[in-house]
Amino acid sequence: QQVTMMAVMPLLLLSLRQLLPVSSFAAHQQAAAFSHLPRFANRQTSSTTSCSSRKMTSNNNEQQQGLGDIGDNNNNSSSSNPDMKTWKERIDISIAKSRKVRGSNYVQISTIDYETMEPRCRTVVFRGFMKDLPFGAVEEVLRGDSTQEEEDSSLSSSGKYIDCVMKMITDLRSNKVSEVKSFQTTGKKNGNTVEMVWWFPKSSEQYRIRGNLQFIGNGGPLTNTNDATSNHNDYFVGERKQQWGNLSDMAREQFYWDNPGIPYCSVKGHEQGVPPGGRDDEGKVLPVPDSFLLMLLYPTKIDYLKLGENYRQIDEWKWEGGESQWEQLRMNP
Image 1 (spheres, one colour):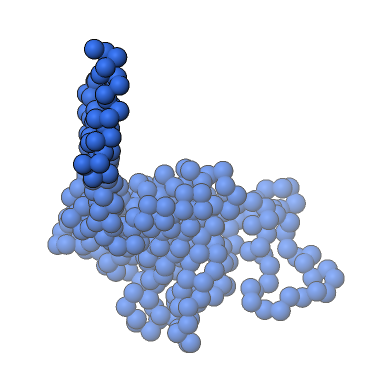
Image 2 (cartoon, rainbow, N blue to C red):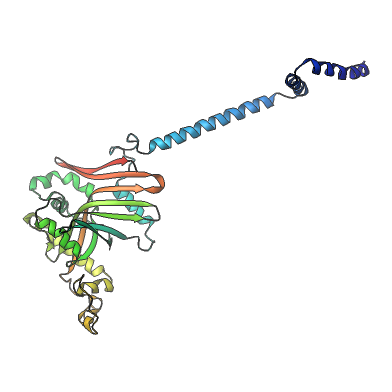
C-alpha cells in the first residue's frame, strides 16, 4: 500500500495544480509542508509586530513630547516650581565647570553713549560676587531711595538677594563712567542700567544680565546723593581697598598711566613716573589712587539660554509691596 500511495501522490498533486489557481496552490502546499511544525513561529511574528508597534508609538510620543516641551509654559514654567533653579544657582554651576578654562571670567558689558545714543560694548574681568552686602545698599541702587519703613519690610527679602551683586573694576577716567554719569546728570530714569553677556563655551550656556551699575570711589558710591547710603560707605570703601590689594602688579600699574583714550606718548622715559607694579621703593602696595574704582552690577533681569537643550529661562527681581523676590519663567528659545 505504501508503494501504491507513493506512486499515486504525484498524480494527485498534478491534478490539484491544474484545478486550483497558482497562488492558492502555493499557499496550500506551503501550509501542508509546515503543518507538522510547532506553532511558536506565529506567536513570534505576532510578538515582533506588537513590539515594533509599541516602539513606533513610543518614538512618536517622545517626538511629540520633545516638540511640546519647547516653550510649553505649563511645563516647569512657574516660579512656584521648586525644581526650577534660579539664575544664581545655575551660574554658580557654570562657573565651577569652567573654572579651569582660560578667559572664562571675561564678560562683555555695554552702555549707551548719551551724545550719539549708540551702544558701547567692552570686555571686562569678572572678579566674583560681593559678600555680605547690606540689603539696604541694594535697595538704594535698585529703588533709588530707602526709608526706615522700607528697610524694615525688606528684611525678609534680603536673603533672596544674597551674593547676587557682581564685582568688577574700572578706571575713573574711562568712557563707561562718563556715559553712565551723563544719563544720571540729565535726570534720566534708569540712567545706570546696563547689560552684560557671559558665554560659557564648555557648557554652551549664555547669560544676558541686565542691571544697575554702581561705581565705588575713595568716599563710597560716586552717585551718592542720599544721606541714607552713608551708613554703608565704610563697607564699600573697605571692599574697594581689599580689591586693590588683590590685583596683580600689572593691573595696578595701569591706574597710574596717562588718561585712557588719548594718543600714546612714545617719548623715551615718559613712563618713568609710573610706579612699577603700583608699589613703593620698599615693595609695599601703594594706597588706592583716585583713578581706581570698584564697579558693581546689581542684576535685575537675567535671560538664560542653554543651547544644547534648547532651554531658556527668564529670572526677574520683582518688588511687590513690602516683599521682593526672584521670579522664574521658562520661555521659548
